[in-house]
Image (cartoon, rainbow, N blue to C red; front, side, top):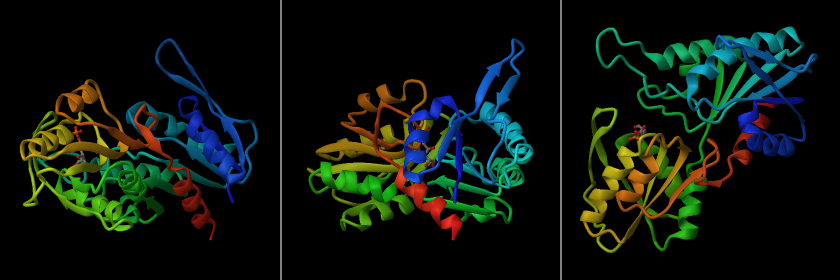
Length: 294
Ligand code: R5P
């Protein structure tokens, strides 16, 4: 079982809840930023054998540099089994070379994490053409759990007879999970992305007139995908459009854009700390860590 959970100061709320649920010790990793931009990272001087590190990879680049140092440092200090608990795992959308010469970042980030950690636990990674975390991690063990059922349950309890809709084909997997427990109507749109901020969404052939729709997705970044779907739904006479996503990245003016598109509520899991967080991923992470023990 996990003896110690390590964390950084910007994820204290989730770390405290997780350590409490696990009944394990919690210690911070302290950071000092030198004037030239380098980090000094300080861990507890002596570590137990089974250590987990909580680190979500929203805004990933600086955090990956920290993981590159923390993982071997933890082993130097006594950790024998090191698990990365990574609620949001970045770089999963780049799973093929879309143009010649383009790096397949998913594969390379996966290989780096597999080299640093014995196990990686994450939530709703954007797996599409590559189906499993074992493939991402190059044979090392990985666990993916899903917050979709929690979001579906929230929608069922807060919206009258909702239709759950994925804004693109990849989202069909999460919408199915979200709809299952309450037997909710569901479907998925198709999406064409022509740039970081240019998307076109086509609705599936369903009757949305007078219906409350909840858009379900793994991650919202610029909000363009959700906004395009909402505009199309309201144009077809939907009564309301709400949003429930696992990972609330919401960069720049994303929230204002969603409001401007007519979206009523924005809900998310607390995998990424954000004002829209309404459901807790702690039970999912506890179960994944317990499974790892088996
Ligand atoms: C990709 O297909 C993901 O599931 C999301 O739909 C996408 O990343 C959302 O990006 P944005 O909010 O920038 O449209």
